[in-house]
Length: 299
Ligand code: R5P
Image (tube, rainbow, N blue to C red; front, side):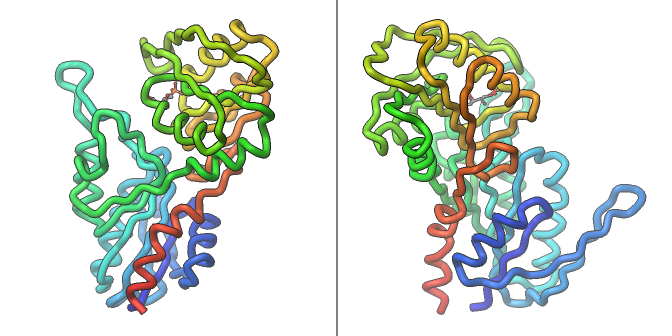
C-alpha cells in the first residue's frame, strides 16, 4: 500500500517527526495565494491510489479550514484512495450546545464538514464535555491520542512534590489521569463563566500538606481568564506554593502568557499540538502510535 504524509502550512516539523517515526515519505505541495486572496494548491508528488495522511494545525480554524478542504478534495481529484486528517488540536469542540436561543451548535457543523471530506481523524485530547465521545459527533473513525503521559513526564522533571489542580469540572478528566501517572494528589475547582474573558473560580477547602508546587492542568488556555483567576485563588490560599501551568492546547497570545506569569505562574508549558513559545511537550509519538497499525497491516 502506498502511503504519503502531507503537511498543511504551519505543521512542517510535526509532520516530519511523524513521517520519520512511521518511515513514510513526505509528499510535496506548492501553494500560491492570488492577489484576490484565493489559494491554489499544486500537488507535486503523485497521489494516485495512495493513502494520504494530512497533518494540520487547526488553531485559528476559520482562516485554515477552506484551504484544508481544497487540499483534501484535491487529493481525491487526483485519485487518492483515502485521506486521513491528523489535527492534534480539534477546533469548535467547545461550541457543543446552544447556550442561548438561536445559537448554532458549531461542534456538530464542523464535525459534519470534516466527516464529509476525510476518511479518518486522529487528534489529541479533544474537548469532550457534553458530547462524550467523538463518535457522537463524527461519522468517520476518529481516534484520540492522550497527552497525559508526556505531560506527566514533563511535570516529573519540572515540579517538585506537586499537587495537581484542574480549574473546573471538565478538567478533571486530564488532571486525574496526570495525577495518577505521577502518584500525586489532585483536586478541581468550581468555575462559572460570565463572558469570553470573565470567569469566577471558587476554591474548595484543601489541605496542601507538604506540597512544594502546584501544577494547574487544563486542556485549553485561550483568553487566559480561567488560569488567571485560578492562579489568584491559589496564591491567596497558599502564597508559598510554586505555581506551574501545564496545558494540552495553548491558544493564548504571548501577552496572555505574560499576564499569567505576572500573576504568579512560575513556569508554563503546553504540548506542540499548537505552536507557541511554551509548546515544549512533544506529542508526535502518541499520534504515531495510532497511525502505525495501518502501516503494519498494509505491508
Ligand atoms: C473550558 O471548559 C476549557 O477546559 C478551558 O478551561 C477554557 O477553554 C479556557 O479558556 P480561557 O483561557 O478563555 O478561560
